[in-house]
Length: 313
Length: 235
Image 1 (spheres, rainbow over the protein chains, first blue to last red):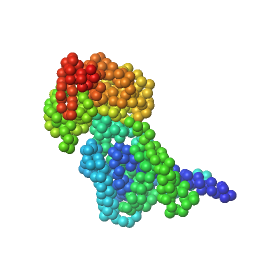
Image 2: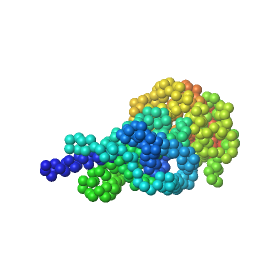
Image 3: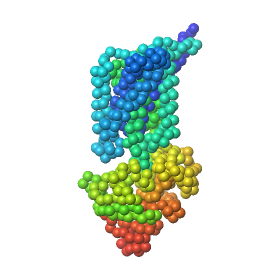
Image 4: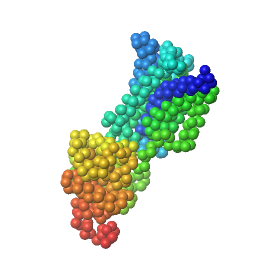
């Protein structure tokens, strides 16, 4: 085999892995994009909801015995999905008792529209979750024990990691369901309206605070599902959220702040760039490559790939 | 139907409304006119619940409106077409109208209201799949009014519907508003800087200046009033 052929194989291998990784990153970014898009709240704790999703999936898979019942292949996937409703509930309660007090209709007219309070609050939640995680879960790195993370399907010359492929498929389905929810259902439409113009939404009789609570909880839950899925192919500890929150923000800004569809493609791009960069750069520089691409896109398209072009009113 | 009594609203130390009393009877067309900064938009916001009055009462159809949460008020039959149109820019024309029909009454009468809106503003039918943010100013105003009508309201509140529009377009909008009022029996509360047009179509009018009602009366009395003529009608 010539050098060109070898490179071509490496190239397509990285492309495939990038797409698979990108699918779960896309879902993770959609969660963050949804919270920002609907509530205009910069949620620093999003990485820690991701972390909670990983631990939720781990304990559902092992301690709750889902893997013992459903086996080491189906079990981790179901556990990853169940991380969604668990963290959804956490997000719902957090919004009900904390976040809702400094956001939404209540925050209009507050100093800086409540943004200072929001930033401090989400930063505080992040710290509490990280250190609370350390106390509850310990600092030992864990991962959902499944043989899928080591096994691959062979497709000609290419290897497709089973854990990543299954996570990809599940992430895409969840993202699609979320998309249909936002496009087709009354609640989804009212959430988009609240995102576009909260005051006008209120004049339609839409309960904007309820929309915000739903968006916050859903955003947390969706990111947690991404975490729960990734927990099968990566080890984690309570501080892992910090690594991911940066990637998440890069994806969301890349796609265009405020656009949920943009967050999806932004996350996908991040996964692709991260994997493709290994072709030419050392493994340690993966995240550097992400930021180079990030800076390039911000430089040439300040509103991101899907920036709100319709925003002219 | 709507009875506002000695309403006070203050922003910080600034008094935006000072003892304002206004009444709208069933099916009546009431205009509130006055210069920029007189407190017209604040009045609407108090009715809709996006500002909290410091004093006074608002009664609507037997309800103490100030005790009703803002998000519930449209469900009582109050449609607020806000200043500057405020359509949902990233949603289609049809989706905007659907959201107008978010109220119980709006949902029940969706088919009829959609027909009515498209018959009043045929251009919205042609643009039903287009994003609202890409419409022209006049079309956005038509959409904002259509969205208000889609809730099947008993009271339609219009905040400066002519703002920023070419005179010909503004005239069309005023014609349609009169048509809505005459043919469909909806009570209209209109706030306008274009005093002549607003007073011409109303049953009853109020002149609001720096937060106070300085004049009120029925259509004929206001049109004939010398002060109104001098200050607003340029006669």
